[in-house]
Image (spheres, rainbow, N blue to C red):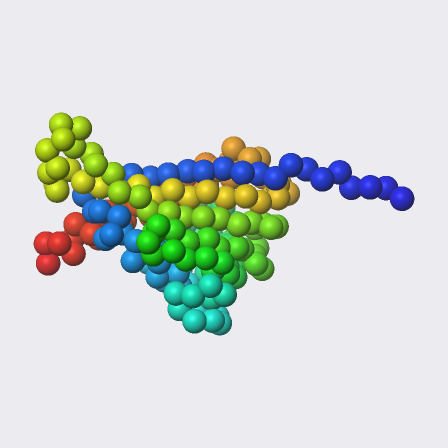
Length: 179
């Protein structure tokens, strides 16, 4: 019998800084697990499949058709994506959540990710100026290698998605303060 060689897991982390909104303003946006499509421009839909909102065990469906026309998105020629994702842990004190990708169209196997929102003090002069505050979203993951993908391309894809999400959250946080 031929034994399959187990490839090492892919592990990585990407982050995005938001200037202006504090972690307390951004966390509720990320914690709204079933409405991730509001922040990921490449997702057309996301909704609750089963479970209780805000509690581990919640499963969401999210997807897009792959018809991205966003010129800033270097992955616009990516294949269609759909997935069911399960909330594993949510911690409002540490402002983090972990989820697992279940059924999906990208070939992700044993993919688990953690997203956390951290406060930043961007004022290096120590003035505690609220206009200089901000936050950072960190997205880390562990998964089996994905057939047909190169690790660097996968992490670049995640980073592109996170940067886009952070820009939208930053923009919407500024708009909500002025309205």
